[in-house]
Length: 361
Ligand code: 5AD
Ligand code: FES
Picture 1 (cartoon, protein in one colour):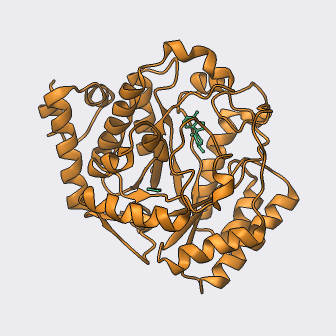
Picture 2 (cartoon, protein in one colour):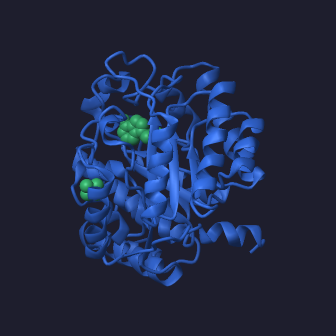
Picture 3 (cartoon, protein in one colour):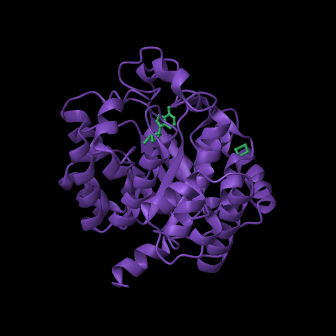
């Protein structure tokens, strides 16, 4: 079956998804046009901001792809002070960003739990409850997730990285800290607690094919996920996976695949929030805007204090590391307009899917 016929189907099967992900030229254009139309019809052209604070790159994990993995001694480790985090939150609030994402390396400890809990309460206070808060702090116990939820976080992002357990094993050490089953349990726990739950994968990893990527999309659908952030895998020289760089697709093809993943997901899950991954912009200066045109509706401007940004290098060539938040904002304003979008200032921009899921629709 060709792309045109597939795009008219009510229900997409695995084989259909693979065809869409492999579409080229005219067929790829059809896919993108359909994704744009679905997005406009279902959620409109609004793009919502999530001010991203990468408050520490100290990480307890050792994932084989990630530049801030514990064993990478070449990384300069940092920890933004609470005061600076609150300043960043104030900036987001005063500039009508609507929401904030707090991201850091993965740590599990009573001190870390308490620190985040206090920060959440402070951010809620300084924004008079108005700033929405998303956490992206990895695997934690149910109790910790509950405490943070009560303290004011209402969305949580935990990328499954790949939905294929065998592949997951190849990208992570084999130990209890890097257990696929636990990651999955964490995602389920987040959903049960009542978080708007987000996940995501990397696209174009070594050993991964379009069948795996189709499975990733079906995983998101099956899981009834509310939000997705996914982007191209970008090799980092100080990581074990770098040894396989010769097996990777050329970077432009990984970029293209990431756009097709976003477009296909928009067609598969019409009302979820999809982020324009920053990794897209590391490859193409207009990468995030291109993803907005084909289905993404969330952008995460980096509001980490400038001097730390270079050190949160999960992958190479990370964009915007030299800009201060103020410059980034003006720049994004123009960029979103160029992508035919409109910024939803001062709004949470919740996932429509989440509210429908709660209402049992
Ligand atoms: N390339 C692209 N994305 C990466 N991440 C980590 N390392 C890389 C890389 N080399 C992503 C992971 C993680 C998120 C914070 O960043 O998906 O969940
Ligand atoms: Fe950050 Fe342009 S988007 S400087």
